[in-house]
Image (cartoon, rainbow, N blue to C red):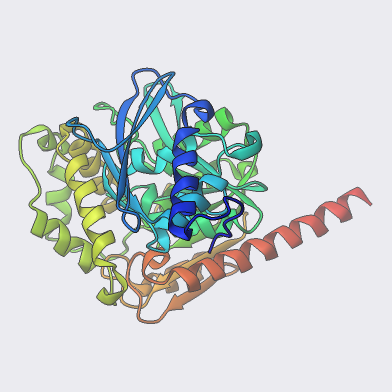
Length: 422
């Protein structure tokens, strides 16, 4: 709870309202600006005091007014006065507030999260997080950055976005890490080039390019599903860029494919994604639920946000093409042979933690034995009663494993550098 100071003689509700009014009144002078073409209207609703503010942000200016106009908001942010004041003081990040269900969002999720990064905090401090774009040849990558310290990159799975790592980003940023959660190209708010190959190698090149633009020489990685495969690809091709790898149900190469599907997938063309069609809401919700073993772990509100975001994204033909291309490449990844995944995995130099879900319907824990055969020095853990997205279904346990693993890798790295300097 925040401590209200000053304003003697006023009722606590009036004092709180005065502080909230001041927080909104000073927003324009603390505005950091936005990218060219940015024009977003936010409605901020504080239910406990029954007030709404409209905040319209453009490239150079922010305008604030109490009450809502007839202008349809692009984003609605709802909370309570105490939480809002904590956000404005920098005591709490929006990601943490969302994770703790102290804040709700409606509309474009990325723009909602980006709101916090548009304003300086009191005393000129930078915001606790920012959503920004990294431009590479032929593609634009949307990145959430928060925290200070050792660098960590978070890579999401097929069809997901950086939102699947909100809890992890918040946890690691409070633990001495500077965290960058990416929307891989073709997904989320990143661009979706229609001629891109969407292979693990291409994604890895993209991640390396993002690191270059952000001035990151080396980082730890957390990757879920396809993101785990991309992290492994980068570690195999550019090991000097990678510290340690925390791989959550990574999309390793299938050893026994359903042969009836294999030729169909090989012949199927992702270009069909350009044909007009849509994914029904019930179908999306059912697919999302199927990724979890404990469906009670899915907050219904968060599920609705994810489904809305998926529907919004996949109205784009280029997004459907990207999804189908990436899915096809994951399925057809060769397990063996000269350039097969597992013989290459044996050459992995960096410390790796593989976390599997006991009830993962996509990448079952049976893959553990193949990893053990080709990379016996890797640490492997099976989370009982968990599905395909452990950072969402079991966030506390998963984030604890990641923290412990990275701390150990950092300690070993420090000891090694000390020996080399001696």
